[in-house]
Image (cartoon, rainbow over all chains, first blue to last red; front, side, top):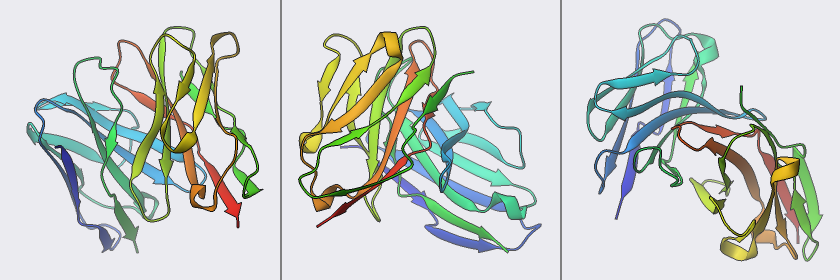
Length: 114
Length: 113
């Protein structure tokens, strides 16, 4: 069966520090991968998605970037964190090309920028 | 741009009451529709989905949703809620032929025992 991992689960970082959040998927190949930020009362905001290694689509221009160095690995990064980057970050995957399948979500990372 | 509206942000019900959560989307083409649920402390998980065919779809835990194309709606229903249905519910839309899923802002449901 497929599983999705995210780490770390929680993170407290000072303003101006770098960020690296990692997401890995097991039990499938060529997944579509997604990064979302979830904020109370604002739902899930799509940040990035990837349909293949090295292919990244950015949905919201901001202080973050994403990379997909391996088929089942998706990384969210920042060179210098802002206070506004605080939030709950979710990774998700779905199957296939233009698939009609649902997304499967990881446990999330709670990021607090101080 | 596509958008999804969930008009009920907070809903409080007593056990055994009926539930209907609204979801409207803005997109004129073919869409795939989803309802996800996030129980306290747990991952987001799929409740039900609509791709084609019968517009009334049934999901887990007694939930159902009806796709009304003319109203661009996909409302979630449950005839009798339980305390364990306390959670946050998200509606999501994906246009056919794209990879992007657009989520609504969510509805927090609290069921009183």
